[in-house]
Image (cartoon, rainbow, N blue to C red; front, side, top):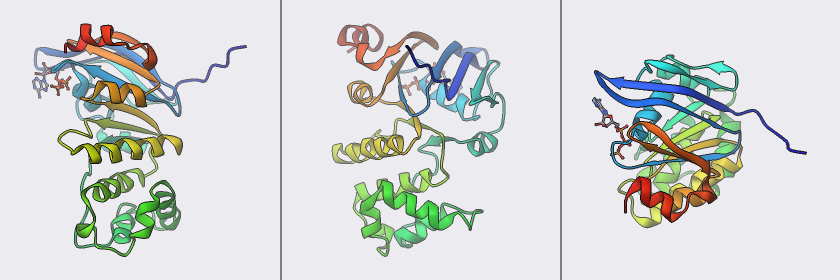
Length: 237
Ligand code: ATP
């Protein structure tokens, strides 16, 4: 017997243009709950445009984006965010003169009642932050600040995180922190769309893979099947 779960996110024939230039053409894919999708492609393939379209930063000219039955197509970014789609590194950074605890509390503006539970959840996902809760954020190590900034982002309890080149320009140790943090978020029930320059790392992390080529979905399938030959064909070296 095969068990089929309905997708968390369903993207159908998504098309985006900048003026007359078509950046995405009829892109279709889905993301199951609790899974990670790696989106790969050469420079200019449309990866960031996909992230922007999913989070409402650019309006699609056609196609649809549906999150668990909720049609998000064409909605403004704030409404999409409220529906549970979080585009990172949006809101990256911490307040250096405030403590770790103050930084976390501030991330949950508007929902005072849910605040202690949200802070507790963040400490469960990132135990290292619990130990440093009274420390000024500016005195944390780079990796710990990265962790705090992800913890802040995750405090709004997203259902889907779009991680757009989160490790860009980071030292290898910090890249490890980013991956570990996303692993923890996924273990806590958050689905992830990962756009990454490190294809192999992204594939090791992800369950599924979507390869874009000149704005089109050129290949999709299980991450384990995206072998070196395929990567070479679509991504070059
Ligand atoms: P990279 O890996 O280099 O960041 P990418 O796969 O994220 O590339 P996009 O940034 O989505 O690619 O760009 C897709 C196409 O759309 C490219 O041809 C790019 O030049 C074009 N493009 C992106 N943003 C704009 C814009 N604001 N105006 C016009 N064209 C744009």
